[in-house]
Image 1: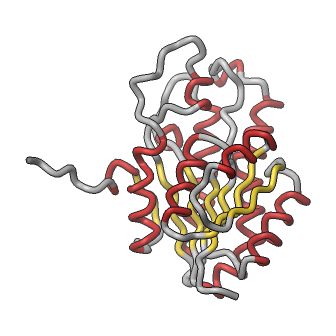
Image 2: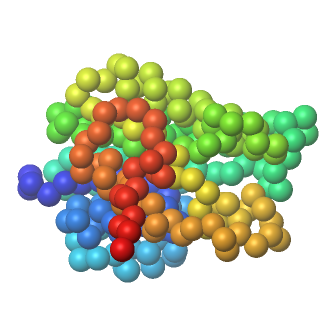
Length: 235
């Protein structure tokens, strides 16, 4: 076992997951990263800063894949941080709830709620021993009523409440759920097919907010990345 801190980050082949993996790796963390697209994941991992990176392609809803993530973290000495970033938008273009295909809604809950909770259950014993943390990526759609976002928002709301209860139950582990804000990611583009979203900031811009939360080990709870960002220096 080494003194290096180890993070498991799901959905890390692009977007926010990759940006967080890069940010932690620059700070000396070892990272276990996954994504469904093996080629994209290997390419992303090859571009990470020099550090221990374990890239495991797979579907987070697959129990065998979740177990492989835990084994990989254990091989590094044990997880100190789980970032539940992998998610799915659900039906696209975004339908009204009155028209939402229930099969697609069920699949969205499987990816956005059940799989993160099951992975969290697997790593909790090690996180308790190591004084670790669980960080789940959420959205303002979980707490606000945006037309068309009912399916995704309902799933994120469930993830938030699960995190809220977990935070109340765990006294050795920090539990955070963080709204990164609107970002220029592939998922956000899927929500607005054919529209220009180039005005949204890149995922890299909010990494300092997440690193502040992790470094300072702030109390368990819900956070907005915008509130954690370092103040802008005024000349």
